[in-house]
Length: 178
Figure 1 (cartoon, rainbow, N blue to C red):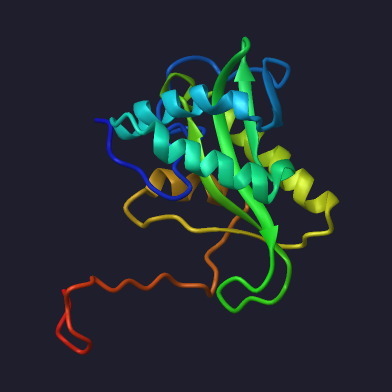
Figure 2 (figure 1 turned 45 degrees about the vertical axis):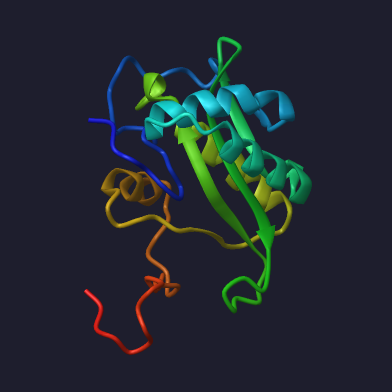
């Protein structure tokens, strides 16, 4: 079943599906994102979300390339984009004044699920953040994605005090919500 995914989207986030042997670290090449990676990211997005959304991914890639080009990565296997991770370092976000790294969006081609691509991306991003003097890295994971939550937990992430709140527009303030 190919379910829709959202923030920190990682259908293949390391162990959700097993489609082959774990790849060696030499087989997975992690590097900085470039504009030339857009087609691979669109392809992965389509596989993960069952929708072809080139405009969505072009907007996201352009945003992160302009904001923090060193903070977004792709992983290649045999010269093909197998995964990506978009993020940056910032402060003042959600009232948190300290500078921290953020993992915003992650995707791994389902054909490479459980083969170490997600872990290779995360390890490189964490290494880059640490080199920039960052002491904390955050992400947000939808509770409907336990596999993604497990992936980040295996990396050492833990629940934080930051909580997500939502308002469904069209309801009047104070009206009962379900």
